[in-house]
Length: 82
Image 1 (cartoon, rainbow, N blue to C red):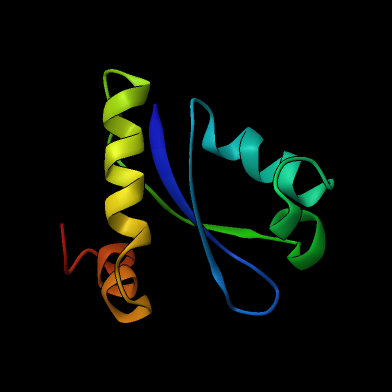
Image 2 (cartoon, rainbow, N blue to C red):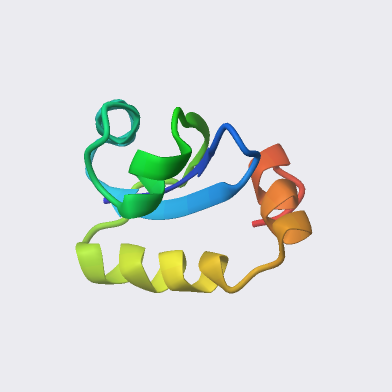
């Protein structure tokens, strides 16, 4: 499992989990998945975490990142923050 951050055409960040980040972006961009994906696509994949051994750990990290400010997420994407 991976945590990913994608950017919408409106420059909003979307954070999610998946087993295949590239395929997930394709699904977002074809209207599949979340309501945000249908309304704000297309999306560009900006960040993919190291692999997590299970869905539970990926969800925990996803929730943590979702609570961060946009500036902190930008630092994660650029590699300044772990």
